Image (tube, rainbow, N blue to C red; front, side):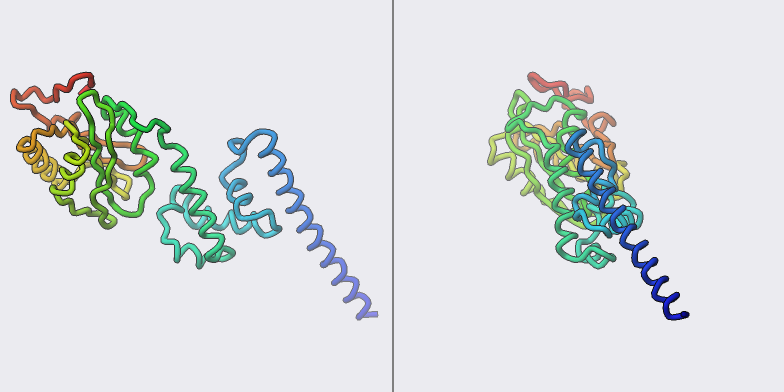
Length: 255
C-alpha cells in the first residue's frame, strides 16, 4: 500500500513537471507569435534573449539569470567572453550567439551613408555612438574631413585599457595625410560611462592642435563619449583660433 502511494506520488510529480515544461514551451510559442505579428520591438529584453538562446523549456530561466547577474543588455557587452561563458546555462556556443547578436544590433545603428556630412558636435556624437558605446577598453578615433565637412575616413588609431589609451601623434596625422584631409575631429570613449575629460585628455588635445598647425590641418574638436552622453572640448572653450574667437571658421560647417 505504501509503495502504491509512493508510485502515485511520483506519477503526480512527474505529471506536474511535464505540465510546467509544456507551459513554458507554450509561453515561448506565444512570444514567437507576437514577434511575427508585432515585430521584435514589441518584445522585452528578457523575451528577446530567450528567443536568441533557443526556444527550450529552460531558456527563460537562463535568460532571466543572465540579465539579472549582468545588469542589463548593455552591460553584457562589457563582460569578458570567457567569464560570461562560465555562467550557468551558457557555455561557449550560447555566449558567442549572445555577443554576436548584440554587436550586430550596434552595427545596425550605424549610418548607411558612405561619406556623411557632419557639421557639429551633436552630429559627430550621433555618428559615433553606435561605434564607441559599451566598449570594454578606451579607443581613440580620428575623423578626417574635407573643407565641406564631408567625412573622408574614420580611423581607429589607438586602443588602450579600461582607463587609459596612449596616442601617438604620428598615427593621428598619418590618417589625415593619407586621406588628404583639411580638418580632423578627435574622439575617444570612457568605458566608465563618465564623459568628463581628464587633464591628460586636455593636454593631448593641445599637443595635437599644435602638430596640426605645423601640417596645415585644423583640429575642429575633441569629443569624449560616455554612457549616452558626450563632452565637446570645443564647446567647453578649449579651442581658440589665432584671433582667440573660440571657434573654428570652416567653410560650410557649424564649427
